[in-house]
Every structure is written in structure tokens, then in C-alpha cells.
Amino acid sequence: MSRFLTIADVAEYLNVSAGQVRTLIKNGELPAIQVGGRGQWRIEDAVLTEYVERAYAATREKIASGEDF
Image 1 (cartoon, one colour):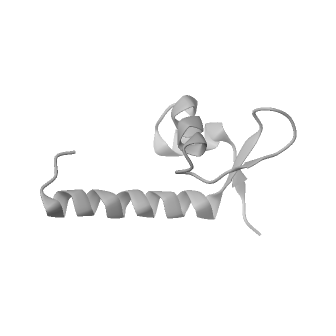
Image 2 (cartoon, rainbow, N blue to C red):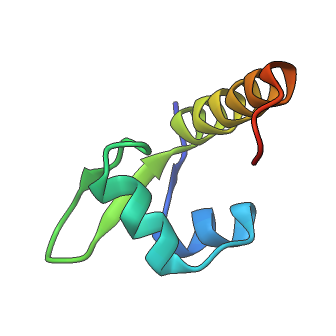
Image 3 (tube, rainbow, N blue to C red):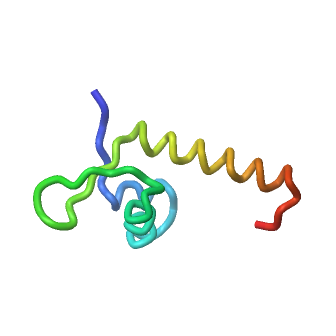
């Protein structure tokens, strides 16, 4: 069974603010589900792992293309 993380958990894991995680969710970059009341979001641990893997792949592509980042 998958583990679901809070926005605060994800923010700590990525070393970013909770607001930045909310922006990733809002932009569709980080899939999440809303549970319970307003502001109660959960991110599946496997989804977070996939997000990080995509971010690494995008960074590798930028470096390989010589694009500034």
C-alpha cells in the first residue's frame, strides 16, 4: 500500500517552501489529491519519486543541450 505525504512532508523532502509545493500542484507538475476539507492535500510517495526522476531527466537534457539553467 502506498504512503501519502502532506504538503509539509513534500516541502521538507524537496527542501522548498509549502507554497512552492502548492504551486507545483496547482500547475499540474506534481499530481495530488484533495482529502477532507480545504487545503488538505496528499501526494503519493511513488508520485513524488516520479516527479524527482522527471526533474533529474529534465536537468540532464538542459545540461546536454548547453542550455543555461
